[in-house]
Image (tube, rainbow, N blue to C red; front, side, top):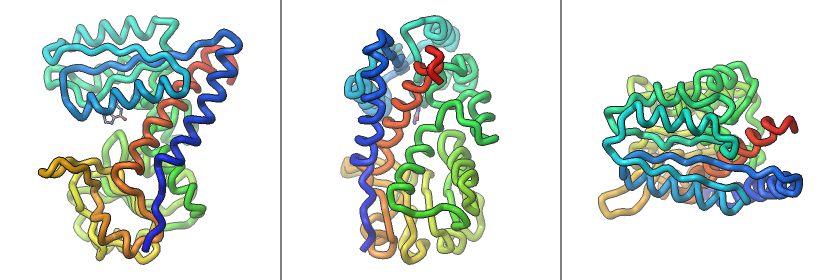
Length: 284
Ligand code: GUN
């Protein structure tokens, strides 16, 4: 039976460290602010945005919510980003994705000042990640690294398999594992021998958005299995990309859904917002 990786516990520690640093800055008169922008009424986005605001309150940051209607134009959103880029109270800007179809997500990401890009989605920050010089951490992949580290696993030389090649998770995840000297394979929907590759993984990270896609036969005995998926089943229950009940019997360590990667993403976002404030004030 696998050991459960407790994302709530690990994220609480990260947030607590952020909270202590934020309190020290507050004592010097430095207040930290995160702008959270949501366009439309995607229910999943609303849940994420609420969690991000709650986390801000927990660590002592101000959060500024901008909830825009579904029919917002690209120009209107660009105008808001411009205002937030110039707003001294705002250390981080988070525009919740996905955006309605009339808005080009890349145009918005490119417009966010790289200094306030706490998601690390701007090409400047993506480039920094590629060369291993992190201005901001890519939130979900950095959270996954914290979870892997919490198991005591040494990544160096290990077979690391990432399923999924998204800009948000799969690609930056591969880079972080590579920077820690893992031997990294990226699998995706066109990979022909996916099962065989996964079965070789000492560390398996799954981020594809397909409920229970990873079955026990795809997992090596004792592997560290990290499930980034968050799928809503017909019965309303949340479920990851991994068939938890079966894989749990074979893996060495496994993350639950919910309570695994999700809380980590938000904790790392808080860490990035703190980093932004420290940079602005010449403290790093
Ligand atoms: N949508 C899903 N995940 C994320 C994320 O990490 N950041 C933003 N901005 N939108 C998302």
